[in-house]
Amino acid sequence: MDQSSDRPEEPDRLQRALDAFDRANAADPNLELVDGEKLPKELIYGQRMSAWLDRLCPEASEALRLAVRCQHIERWVTPRGSYPEGRIGYLTWRRDLKRYHAERAGEILTEEAVCHQGVGDSTEAVEGQIAQTTPHRVAHHERPGQHRGRHCSAGKRLSG
Image 1 (cartoon, rainbow, N blue to C red):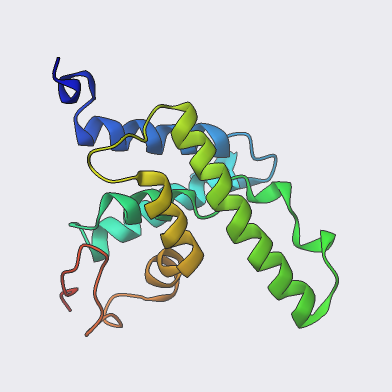
Image 2 (cartoon, one colour):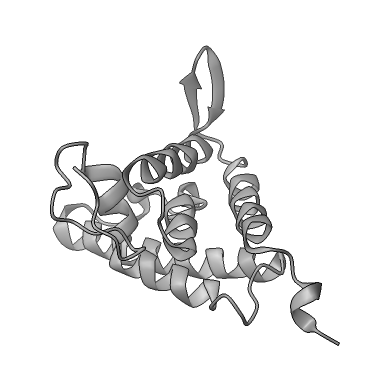
C-alpha cells in the first residue's frame, strides 16, 4: 500500500498546522483592538507576521512559514516580568521562550499529525528556524526597501 496516498497534500498539511497554531494563540488573554474588535494579541501577531512573510518572500519554505506563525506561540505563558530585570534576565527570558516556542510548536505539529516522513521533518525545521530567530528578524525588523541582498529561506534572493 502506498503510504503517500494516506497523507494530505502539503498545502493542506501546512494550513492545518497554521490553523492549529492559531487555535493555540486564540487563548491569549491579552487583547488588541483591531478594526474596532478586541482580538487575542498573539493570534493577530502570528497572522500579521505570516502576511509580512508572504509579502517579502512568497516562495518561503514550509519550515519558515510555520516558524513565522508560531514564533510567539502562547507567549503570554511566560511573561517578561517573571524574570529578573536587566540584560541577563532579558536574555534568559528570550532563550527560554525560544525553547518553549519550539517545544510547543513541535507538540502541536505532532498532535495534529502534521509531522511525517516525506516533505521533511517539520518539527526539526521549525525548531531550527525559531532557534535562529530568523523569522523574527526577517518578518519583524526588516521593512520594504531594507532587504536588498538578503535571502529568504526558500534559498531565493529577496527582490528589492
